[in-house]
Image 1 (spheres, one colour):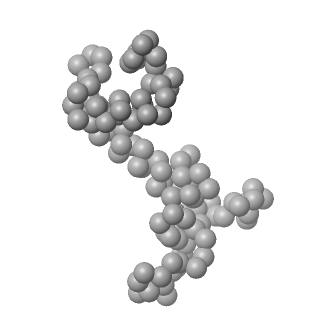
Image 2 (cartoon, rainbow, N blue to C red):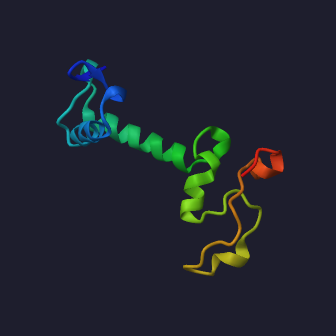
Length: 108
């Protein structure tokens, strides 16, 4: 899809990409074939969040970066001893469904 000056989205500068997404969200941009900008933006945002917060085994959340950011323990079998400790960071690193990278010989 061409956007501005014959450039595709990926060829735009970061500020131009942000402006395009903002305009799409606000309903100022529609896509080909009658696709409404706000609807597509909502779907894009939903899928982006799902990928960013999902278990890394599915291809997103590389190195469990979003889980580390949130302090989420991941797929641990038990962290009940920490559930009632509000506003205290969880002391252990997150664990994926397939385990920790260092357990698999992939480093941290």
